[in-house]
Length: 244
Ligand code: ADP
Image 1: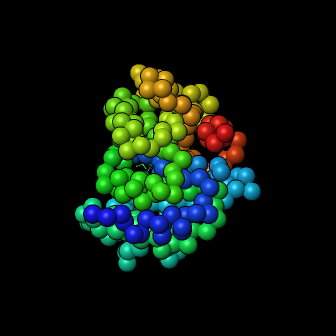
Image 2: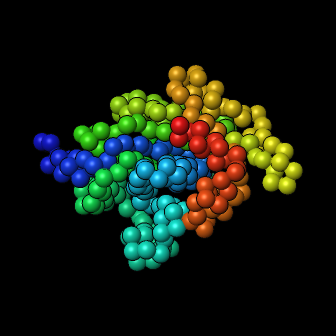
């Protein structure tokens, strides 16, 4: 099989994008999409930077809702948002390719690529489609729980095998600050800080810890920028640390 003739087309399409970052997680539900949208909002707090998100989680896209664009024509590309996408790998890969090839991405500082949990077909195809145009690397999102951390090791192994640089680990849902009394409780008591320890063990940068904050969930549900709504929250401070 010869080289894919679509790759140079994709590379040309993405030539105006300065940085491409994949957002990965070992497990679902750890806050990967939430983190992707928070990160986009955090980058956008700098009025000079332009940010885009591409959601490659074809079967469970959350980004349109979290970014408040669900009602726009770009939304799920399905007639009804409750429809299930029951597609095998090749069809999903075809759609991802079409996204990259046919969208006029224009000039952008950052393209954040949200991916499905784990290491699936979509990751392999995104990586092969973007390889020529250059991916800066991947940020791996995890909760501090041991079951989640176990899968992070696999995610990092995948990155190493696929030649993707791991930019760092982010620990999400790391501690809960009570909005009434401001006391911080560790929800995953035994392993809080596990993300940091794992990063150290695997010789990967630890980018930061984002607390569990009910307002983050609410902002996601309403498609609002958490940064605009609650700029003073510890989660915002944590996110700003990640961006730096
Ligand atoms: P994933 O993309 O890893 O499957 P999501 O981003 O969809 O996970 O997050 C799962 C759920 O947890 C969502 O309901 C989201 O609003 C909530 N959530 C994620 N991170 C936080 C956080 N730091 N504080 C509060 N809720 C969060």
